[in-house]
Amino acid sequence: MKSNVSAGNFAIPQASALSLALSLVFASLSGVTHAAAVDNSTWVATRTQAFLPQVQANQKSVAADASVVTPAASAVQLAQGEPVHVTLSLNLRNEAKLDKFLQDLHTQGTASYGKFLTPAQFAAEYAPAEKDVAAVVAHLSKSGFVNIRVAPNRQLVTADGTAATVQTGFRTALKRFQQDGRNVFANTDAAQVPQALSGIVGSVLGLQNVAIAHTHHRWVANTEAAATSQAQVLRTNATPIATPHSPSQFPAIYNAGATPTASNTVVGIISEGDISPTITDLQAFTSAKGFATVNTAVVQTGPVGSDYSDTSGQVEWNLDSQTITGTTGGAVKQLIFYASPDMSFSGITAAYNRAVTDNVAKVINVSLGGCESDTHADGTQAADDNVFKQAVAQGQTFSISTGDAGAYNCQTSSISGAPGVPASKSTYDVSEPASSPYVIAVGGTTLYTNSGAYSSETVWNEGLSAIGTYDAAGDYDYTKRLWATGGGYSKYEAAPSYQSGVIAAGKTTRGLPDIAFDAASASGATIYYNGQTGTVGGTSLAAPIFTGVWARLQTANSNALGFPAASFYKYFRLAANASLRHDVTSGTNGASSSYGYKAAAGWDATTGFGSLNIANLNTFIKNTSDFAR
Image 1: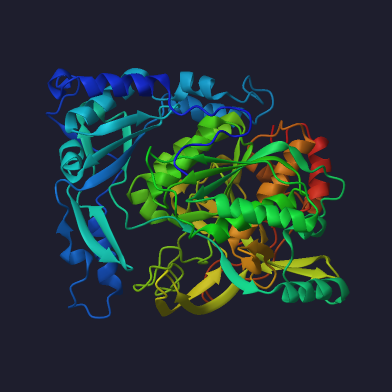
Image 2: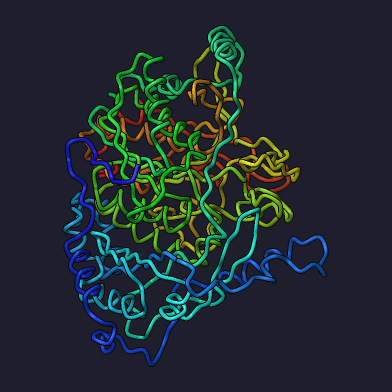
């Protein structure tokens, strides 16, 4: 698949007129023409920090022998002609005014209450100004970059260059080394831009590929006979148990009741690579469950000419699509896969941005993430927040899994790079983009049912186990890692106003998750994958359950609901509304019961407010005029 596919019967714009015009203009004019456009006498740092020194320090800290020269310490400079694709994230305009608008959007009595913006309205008021974008393009062109493209919302500018043009354009070298069996590179210095661009360019993405996004799931293959046996247990056992479920069973378990399906709501899935096998498996799932064939579309979000042949994430995209379809009751207006060509932070950010600029999907599922410190250091976190702010302004909701490494998303194996290796059991961190205040962060539970009906949930924590086979070559990592729900407190994101008085006393940063759903391998989802079935757990299951739930609630309320975080924190904390959710009060997400965060009554940093009672919440929304409006 080499070209973008239209979603349904509507054409999705590929580039703005500004992008095309600038590309033509700057391709035809010499660099000298634009030399006066940007003052190069003084340079300033962007949010993109020097990444290589951080990798070197991390490798040194986990090395078994302090005298050993680590791979990053012996990194060598990339050849000057080595190709590099960069993505510049530009700062939003009138951001203080935007922040006030986002608060007023969900505050009754304000002029902005309930008035979602269109992409054009957002661009007119808050996107980077066209003259500023032109200055950025001029700088890139003068530095030697080509194939310069500007996103329709002017937030992202992409370009192709080399290690030499990176040095010229951003004053940093790139060095190569090996990590986790991969050939990788990272920038030696903070990315800089000329002083004239200091208020325009926020981050320069693509200067490292050491840290990438990871999916959040565990796959356990099983036979149809085993699945049938599990279903029999589900029907006959009168004692609460944790057992696998078909995604089609989640609506009954979480009490969808008479809540309509999502037949009038479009759902997006952030994905990667070749999606065609996933669509084939989705058709097998819907056929087996008696559902209608789902209307699907694939929108490829990478640069022209990108390779989308990778299928290594197929289990993840199968889990997302089958869980969303099952949870919606087998009817969703359309599933749009926004497919990045790879799992690079910059590629995934571009996929988020495409879903937002299209403004077609009302709810967007993201079952992946990365160590928050990594995304903060390379500028991705700030870029993502800008995109998510536009989503909130437009009434879109991102549902994002909190990770499967418990409280240890940034502690990784020195062999495979897998997270969740608690070298320091009392040092905690979280996953990004779940840590953004502009998304719904979804944690994980172990779900117990009684004769197929909801019984209770605990914090999902399966303890430590060997990482196992970690690449296509069959390499094995005996390092033990934790499999448990992500949750905790951001190191960088301030606590949003809606969390005031709810998160733990003394905490001043964003707490997560907001809510949680089933994520345990023992009680996970049985899905179709290449002609077989298997059970999948992880917060990559929890997020699409919520995505499906929220899509149903959107259809039930004429797609008039917006980003629901403020309403969750306003109403779920009240004892009178206990029937809206299942509070989870048992368990921890640490390496043992003495570590990590612990569940408690009300909101906590393992499962948030717990899982939702769909029908009760729908009734409450209909009777509460300001809920997510």
